[in-house]
Image (cartoon, rainbow, N blue to C red):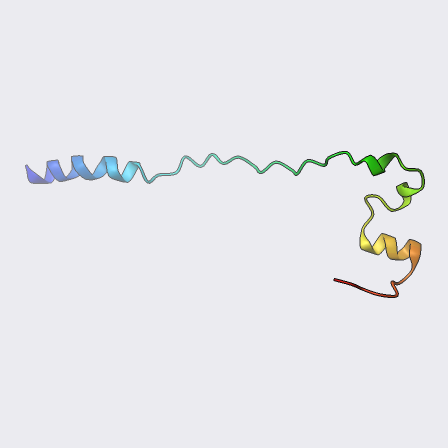
Length: 65
């Protein structure tokens, strides 16, 4: 008799620990439009990586952190 009571007490506790497995994928960060996007000539630098900028301007003379 006590065994049945123990099972009835433990089963709901264990089922609360079970994960549903449904996870939501993180959404990509949103990019806000910059007022600098409309300035002529900035299209060669806006959105470029450091490697691409080195190709355009050459190696930096000073690296300040």
